[in-house]
Image (cartoon, rainbow, N blue to C red; front, side, top):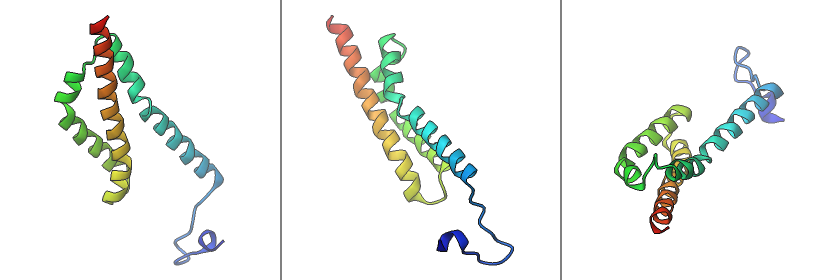
Amino acid sequence: NFFGNYTVTETVANNFTFTNYIGFLTMFVLAAGIIFELPMAVYFLSKIGLLTPKFMRDYRKHSVVGILFISAIITPADIGTQLLVALPVYVLYEMSIFISAKVERDFESG
């Protein structure tokens, strides 16, 4: 109750509404769902030969910069929040390299 009714001055007011909360939650869940589809997308792209583990390893540094850049845009201006967003995405990228290598190994073996 304190945080819902607290005001600094009369000109600054809280604008929390249920509609805003639902909109934020929907966008957050949708974005997380899209990000966590990365390994599946890599699997299918590797399966049809458009993506190789060598390509992903060669461009790993570029991917890290891109991940950090995008996480800096979508998070507030502190490094902690940026890393909380960037680290899981980077782990998914590394898992995707492993998945792509397994697809390539399976294709070569038979």
